[in-house]
Image (cartoon, rainbow, N blue to C red; front, side, top):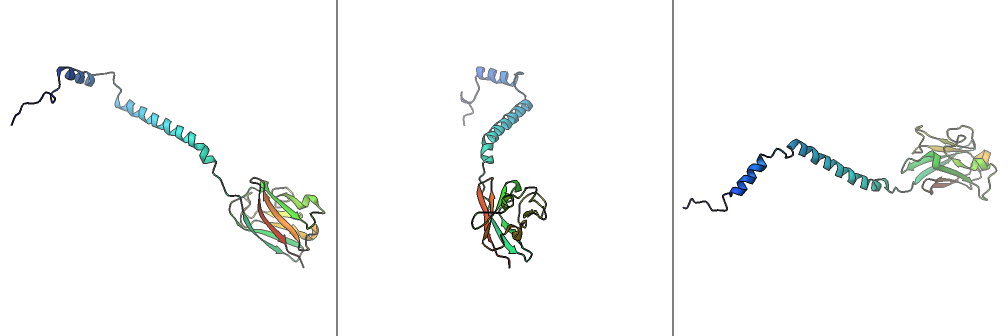
Length: 182
């Protein structure tokens, strides 16, 4: 067994001086400052990635709103059109209704077309068309309903159409033929 160390295992005089100089160097960055700098760089990089990706988070495409509605005719000359299912809550400011006669004419033009949020429609008892928001959250959701004075509008014959259109997405939400009132 040879206990002689090879020349590659022992540091040379120049290497020893360099190691001593590095370990005694007072100008080096302290570990605390180095940690803070690394954290700051990490936060900045993650913020930059978030800002670059934020645009893709805002452009989530939603399906156009669709609804199932039920229609009931009442003996007193009114129709009740109720939302039985609705995929998403809708803004009443953008939900337009139309009561369309078979010939396209309406004796009361203001009453045959409007928005659910109109002052003479939203929760207004006695109007030709009234929208009732059951949860009073100023949104259109399941269970909300329209009441149509079909006798007053002349739409009690059974061949008028009630149509709902959402202006935010330019899509028809629902359409139904109003049954005759006997």
